[in-house]
Amino acid sequence: MFYIADLHIHSPYSRATSSESNLAGLLGWARLKGINVVGSGDFTHPAWFASLKERLEPAEPGLFRLRGEEVVPSPLAGIADGAAPVRFLLSAEVSCIYKRHGRVRKVHNLLYVPDFASAERVNRRLAAIGNIVSDGRPILGLDSRDLLEILLEEAEEGFLVPAHVWTPWFSLFGSRSGFDSVEECFGDLTSHIFAMETGLSSDPAMNRLVSALDRFAMISNSDCHSPSKLGREANLFDTGFDFFSLKGAIRANRRRNFPGTVEFFPEEGKYHFDGHLDCGVCLDPEETRRLGEACPVCGRPVTVGVHHRVMALADRLEPAYAGDSPGFFSLIPLAELLGELLGAGAATAGVTACYARAIELFGSELELLLRTPLAEIHRHAPLLAEAIGRVREGRVLRRPGYDGQYGVIRAFAPGELPGKKRKKGDIFPG
Image: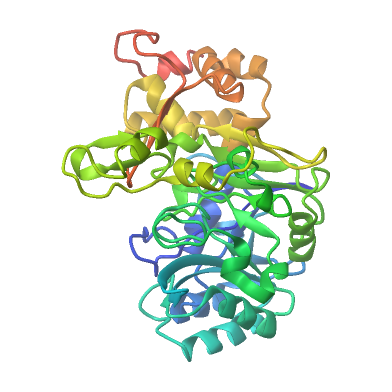
């Protein structure tokens, strides 16, 4: 079965997360996006865990359905949801902050388990170590290696994936607090790690410049804090619709069962390039090295970004892939693309109206962006067809993000679109 999975999200119990990131909100947006498996997020938080146990019921092995899902309304009034099933998979993110080899390390790790009993055992162990109540993503003084050991002991079928592995502040390879190798982080348990999460600021091509990562699958997820951001990155599977087949497809890392991932253009990620946001300074790695990693305006250290860090550990000039390795598809989220066409913000009423019309015509966001023939899109929305065609071919303009500022990806050059203020009828003339 072909399906799409977004395996890293957050609940309303995580800081800076929308109250709409409840189970009904996640379900409704997953249907609009065309996502079939959604990580539950935050199973370590006692209140969210209680809600998960109360509101989810077993479906396929290791997957859960929302009770009463048939009466969950669409987030877009008047727009029918897709018919494809949506399931939840128990997931959590743990922030490990600890000292190793004389340095403070800050690494975020994703946990996946197939059942509530396993999650409960893991939670019991983590609660004995630190506070798992104050944040949906708990901050614990726990070594990443020891977190993995707890997971292996308490959830035999569970697995751990290092999160957004290149992000400067909180990741395995982060410039500010990470390591230079997987082995340095996980030690004698390294063999139990079989996947990495690319994060929004890197993509598989960047990771395949580092030969030490050849044996690891690259998964991609939205890490969303509001349900409308679901699927901005995601995973494509063609395998059994259950936890164990999904896990096996990631571990095997072959295109037949794991066709690939949906990615941001990495320049859009907010830590792609180096820089200093307070001074409005964005730098490529060569400039940063020339300046001694100091901001040319204020002299303080710049935040060394993902691209710089990848190049520091890279031992290839070009990415290397196994012949049957998963592919990847770089996309601009539909609301952003429509916002560019309308000359308006992605969250404005006009963009929302166009988004609803697109879903009404084409069924789901990812179906439209990935698979709908351009000729069919052109029949209803010629300008949108041109934009999606450019995106699929990678013919986009890129302004990199840096130091917490998202980058900007555009399908059209300045002045290329009609100068007048555009409206829904210009995008969907029929």
